[in-house]
Length: 464
Ligand code: ADP
Ligand code: MG
Image (cartoon, rainbow, N blue to C red; front, side, top):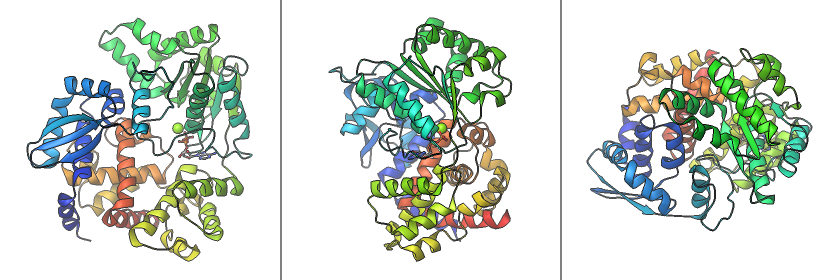
């Protein structure tokens, strides 16, 4: 296939594309937590010959961006647009933007009227709540323990340690705890944190000689604290020391500590014994791969939320394809829905079989491809070197190929965002997340990208 054509066509697409590319350029230039809290909630409003208007979710956010980040945005947007543009900020606030923004800004855990807001990870396509968590045999203990923490924090099962493979709903449950606890106790303080962010912030505090007390306060002042992917503590000696102190302070003040991990405490390497035994001192629960019935219920819920009708036999077909990762399961459904929307097809068994022919799912039944294989094939496909694929160049064809590669590694392997970042020249996990979401949305809106990803998936399958 002729990629030049694809790329030229991309030049014509409008404001969303320019915005998306601006984000790519800004990403990496500013700290992760600023990117996710300040930049990614922005929405492009209009673009003309020399002005790019961008909507911030609140006047608070608008003021901060105008005073601190407008220059970076201007440079990025001008490069993305291909000519100099002036960036103008306005307040554009659909309700869900206001909510998620207020949650993300560290000083803005509440709205001005004091109302407690619902949590949302930056850019998450759906909200993670107990309501939309399907309960089955594989996750019912984790679900009930999580519910208990939200309802009676500090009471029993402290700490609560939930572990299980990638894509089985750990992050979903952690967010659900925060969401629900804040609903029933509006004054409660709950903090969700990715452990890698905790580590980064701690290291930044030390190396940049920032105020340690400020760092501590952020974590200590909470009734419930949720550390996601705690296995990241492995091998971080100094951070483990700090973590231990914070853990003890929280525990001593009867705060509830919830930890998620991809493996049980006993299997996290290079973890101090005193921390391991703290982890084992409460309740440890695993989430296992869902049975067919649960997978079907999840697909059914998701189809309904996307407003698509899918006959049962087609749903069963999809559910039978992936057994051990709900994210991949949702990925398959996304491809079906994308194809139906792009090509105006009706979804039935035959259509689904056709779309998923040789697709991702086969992998989960046979071998998982290695990231190396995926990187090599993607590089070959786009006619670039693996070195460039992992490198720093931000030229458009490279960025696109890199994002597709990250997306495929995320879909086809069990690698975590953190690990994928490492495999792509040491990028951080928010960059990987941003790339995956970008390709996910392109697949739904651009036939070229849908086609590329389909062809690549088939090639990777065959090579494996
Ligand atoms: P993990 O953190 O364990 O890797 P996530 O919480 O990110 O997994 O879940 C991956 C995807 O699967 C998310 O979109 C999540 O909403 C969905 N998911 C996982 N378990 C369930 C469930 N029981 N019901 C509904 N959706 C689920
Ligand atoms: Mg997770």
